[in-house]
Length: 82
Image (cartoon, rainbow, N blue to C red):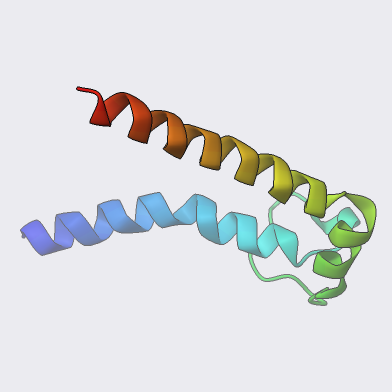
């Protein structure tokens, strides 16, 4: 019984992830259709290429690395002093 409950909870947690993956592969017009389509037709893998052309992901990654490295250094310095 506990495994059935855990499986149901895992499915509930995975639904947004599956929806995100499905939406990432849809055409723009298919995103807001009602009722929603879980399986995109046609699958647009080009969406992933387009996002790297439109948004400066290199800059986003550098900003994230600066924040993470600064956080790690700050934690190491403050925790080793304790």
